[in-house]
Length: 393
Image (spheres, rainbow, N blue to C red):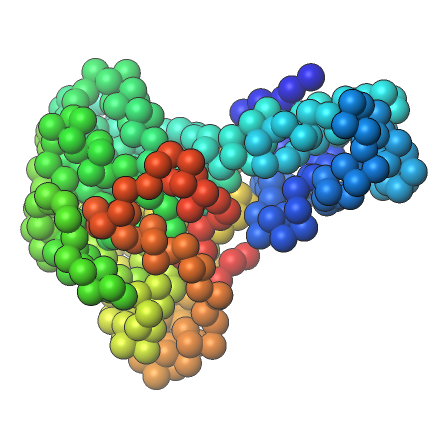
C-alpha cells in the first residue's frame, strides 16, 4: 500500500495523526527529512540495521521481526505510520512488515526523491488584469513565480522541471514572453535556459552573474542582460529591475507594477540571504547591507514574493510565502539587523553563516552552462533543502 507525496502533504497540512518511520541512513536523515506546517513525529531506523537481520527471501518478515523486537514501544498503533526511504523501495518492505504486526502502515511512494521533486501551485492574485502564481518545490523550500498579464507571462526563477511552467501558462490561455533568473542560483538547477529555449522567449540574467565567482570562468549561455532601473514589459504589466548585489554580485529584484516584489534570494519573509556562496562574504556583506536597505525602503504596501523559505510554517493558511514590506522588520531578524549600521550588520552576518554545501559550487557551474549533468546526477546534486538563508526559524 502506497501513499503519494501529495496525499502525505495534505495530511500534514490538515494536522491528521501521522507517524513517520524513516529508514534512510542516519546522515541522510539528519540532513533532510519530511516536514509539514505542524510538528511531524518521526523516528529514524536505518535500513542497514533492519537488513542486517534480514532473510533475503523475506525482507518484510525480517523487518517485522526487527521492529517488533527493537522498536515496538516507539511506533504507535493509533495513527497512520508512513515508511520512508530514498526511492520508495526498501520502505515498501518495511511497511509490509508493519502491517503484519497490526499497524496501519503505508509506504511513501517514490520516497524522498519524489518528496523533493513535487511541486505545488498557490494563486497569490487572480484578477482580470493580472495573475500571480507561486510555484514551489515545498520539500526544498524553493519558490518561483509566474505573472500573467494580457495573455503574456513572465516566469521568474523557474525550477528544473520546466514542463510545470509551460502547462500552467498554457492552462490559463497565455504564452511565455519573459524568462528571468534573479541571480545565478547555487542551491538548485535553474530551468531558466531550458524554458526559454522551449518557449522561444528571451532569457534574462544580470551580466555580473555570468561569471562563476569561484572558478572565474565565463558562462556558456545566451542571455539578455538585466540592468538596474531597466523596465521589462509583458502584456499590460511592467517589471522594474532593481540591482541588489550581496547574495551574488548580479542579484536583482523585480518590482511588478509597484505591487509585488520578486526579491529572489536577497530578502525572505522570515530571514535574509547569506552573502558567502561566492566565497567572498566579507567583501559582499556591505553590498548586501545596502541592497536590503533599498528593498526595505520601498512602499510599505508592496508584497514581498521571495525565492526561498526555510520552514513550511512560514506560509499563511493558503500556503503562500508572501508578506507586505510593512512590518517585515519586526518579524524578520535579518531585516532588523539590516536597519543597523554597516559594521553592526557585518558582525551579525559573519557570526551567523551556516556551513557551506560543497555541491553548490557544481550547481553554479551547471547554471552557467559549464556542466551538463544527466538526470540522475542532477537529482543527486539537488538532494536536501536549500540553505541560502542566513538563519532558519
